Length: 140
Image 1 (cartoon, rainbow, N blue to C red):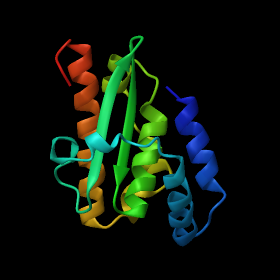
Image 2 (image 1 turned 90 degrees about the vertical axis):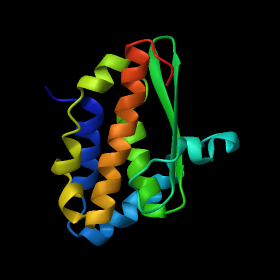
Image 3 (image 1 turned 135 degrees about the vertical axis):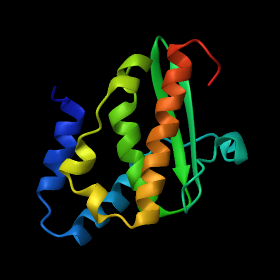
Image 4 (image 1 turned 135 degrees about the horizontal axis):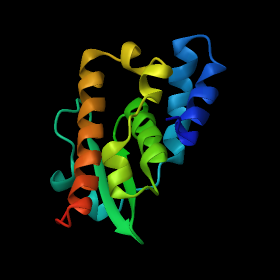
């Protein structure tokens, strides 16, 4: 099933022919990331498996999950901004079940270094774990 947010991201990235331009766009997107509270920029919120430092927090409001995040690496910050954009405002179960097909469609998976690819997988895993915790009523 097509997802409107992911389709929009695929469309945005389709205007770029070169990966260098896509990286520049990722850097631009880092500015759109909802800021994480300073109190959450600590070890409890760090995503293990990322080469750079990435912090992610999630809260459940009115049955929907909202993420905030940050990274000390600008491209990684752009990647997490994309993930937040796709996942924010969905129910926990929608997040758990969602196929993040935009990653392959825009070529992100194949154009990241192995360490960044591992970091991307770690970010997705942590974001889905937050959603799973909310879905099962456990503390995230």
